[in-house]
Image 1: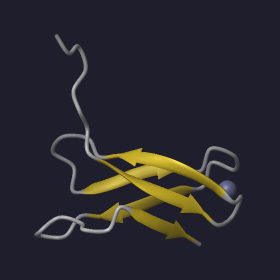
Image 2 (image 1 turned 60 degrees about the horizontal axis):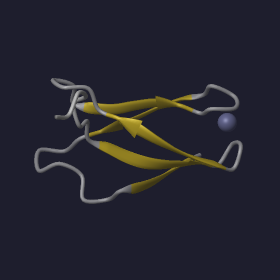
Image 3 (image 1 turned 90 degrees about the vertical axis):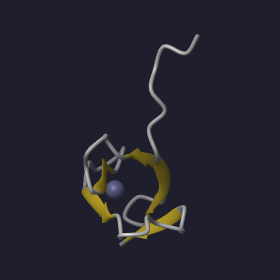
Image 4 (image 1 turned 90 degrees about the horizontal axis):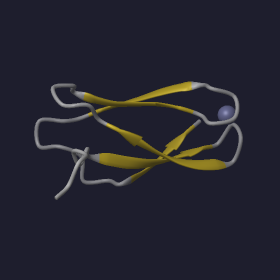
Length: 60
Ligand SMILES: [Zn+2]
């Protein structure tokens, strides 16, 4: 039995620090929101009406 919900996620490559991180979308939210694990810069990726096809994004 699964005890945690599967949240949709995308991969973000943070150009600021050269690190890759998954960011998740909370239920009911229309954007993926995450932070660079090193410098804590915030990124936000909006979800289009049909969702996002792309799985990896660059944060510059
Ligand atoms: Zn950074």
